[in-house]
Amino acid sequence: KQEVTQIPAALSVPEGENLVLNCSFTDSAIYNLQWFRQDPGKGLTSLLLIQSSQREQTSGRLNASLDKSSGRSTLYIAASQPGDSATYLCAVANIYNFNKFYFGSGTKLNVKP
Amino acid sequence: DTGVSQDPRHKITKRGQNVTFRCDPISEHNRLYWYRQTLGQGPEFLTYFQNEAQLEKSRLLSDRFSAERPKGSFSTLEIQRTEQGDSAMYLCASSFWPTGGATDTQYFGPGTRLTVL
Image (cartoon, rainbow over all chains, first blue to last red):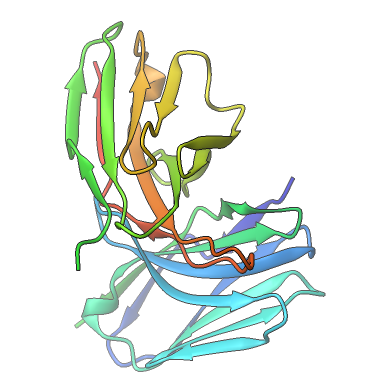
């Protein structure tokens, strides 16, 4: 079974700082990996999807990297803003059942003005 | 463009009662997923449908839980004889699965928060 771990569980940074969120997974036979954002009491918004053949994806101030061999992904947020405050979730789909996402428990980010 | 919608957004019930939640996916999406999320945790997969067929159910889905997607459009998730441990956010997601097989991202609804007293 795939185990997904996210570190740290919570992070508080001043506005403008660049930051990195970490995700690790135990089974490297992944189909894809996705980063989501979740605001309090709300559903999930997809940020970036990385296919297993890709090394990274970028969208605006966000950059996600994938290293399958080491079982790691990072989400880099540049020039953080208070509006980035949310919980960030990493989800992995395996190659033998890519219909099912395994989620980490998230990193709760607080960006202070 | 309407996203995934869920109804109700909040439900408070007493232990032992039955509850039913509804999910309306994005209209052209043929796959629909249900997840459960407890406080401080990531979502856990419960079940998914391709059109009206339920293709997989998690072991988390006990016999008190039943999901349907009768016409391949909206879906319902029913919990019978609710227990306090059922208190959670129930999330629905949908995606389009083309014949070629490449997966698309899942789009999530706002969730239904269930509180069992």
